[in-house]
Amino acid sequence: MPLSVRSLLRFQESGLLLVILALGSLLTAFSGTVRTPLFERTPEGGRQRVFVTNAAGERVPAFVEKNKFLNAQNLAQLAKDTSFTAIMAVGMALVIIAGGIDLSVGSIYALASVLGALVLNHYGADGPGAASPGLGILLGVAACLGTAALCGLLNGGLIVALRVHPFIITLGAMAILRGIAFVATKGQSVGSFPAAFRDFVRREAGDGLSFVPLLAMVLVTAAGWIFLARLAAGRRVYAVGGNELAARFSGIRVERVKLGVYLLSGLAAGVAALLSLGYYGAATSGDGQGYELNVIAAAVVGGASLSGGRGSALGVVLGALIIQMIASGIVILGIDQNYSQIIIGTVVIAAVVLDNLNTWLARRRLAARAG
Image (tube, rainbow, N blue to C red):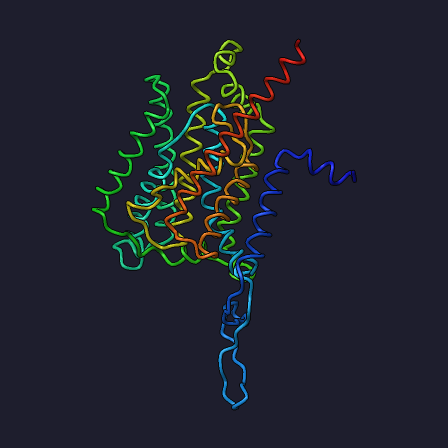
């Protein structure tokens, strides 16, 4: 076997890469083609329609046939949609590796986005603080990220102080935080932000590729990889998730580790919320509903074990890409959208079953060697 192929197969996330390639090939083969308008770049950096002259001498818009999946616009949309889930999934991976779970990430996302939106709206073009948009952007970023980090810290603090299973605490937090978001906005959408903030987040590179969300995803993934793979703090997270009692006896401050991972999970949800504010230009209390399923699915599919002690930042990002490809494929293939959650739920169950099977096989191999 060639060295490059052998190295690829030894790579921890090689299976995920093969799944992504297989999914991409299937979607490319079965998605068909679509007729889309042809655009060209203007000297100012914008886009304009291309016109051609037909047989009758009339100038008409030009169109081009493209594969529904394998085209620049769809791939750019896929990258943008994946970035929000992937950023949150990196934070979720830390919690799961430490042996916990966080069902409140969607509600943290919603509360952080609406509180950040209220501040940005105050300094927007129609707000009373319109004269200081720069200050408004800084305060809006601080409100969004600070709220998310505080929510994560409260989750971790309650879990540590009350010694209650994370499922119960974060399930309650899921309802409470979304309720606060609804009360803060009275169920209304909040928009009208400073133009500079939206222009920065919506900056594009290439053929419609959202540069800022993609860059944020890369930076968060790199930070997660460095934390887990290169820092002693990351090794402590693995130790707590692998065997909490043994970690405690070895001198690891388990409570501090748990506080840290929930804080980082909340902060990751805040980063995603901040990007969504800039990209979509508005926030409501219903934002992020159901995100907890997609985020946990991305982490589990990406190799994070729900029993703790196993997972990687790169793996969960690839898992997020797989989940988003499935969701995108449902739309492209014209499948009823109501099947989306059914399919994603099935993928999660399959990933957990495979993880348990791998754990059982590993134990069997260890027992055989010991015998």
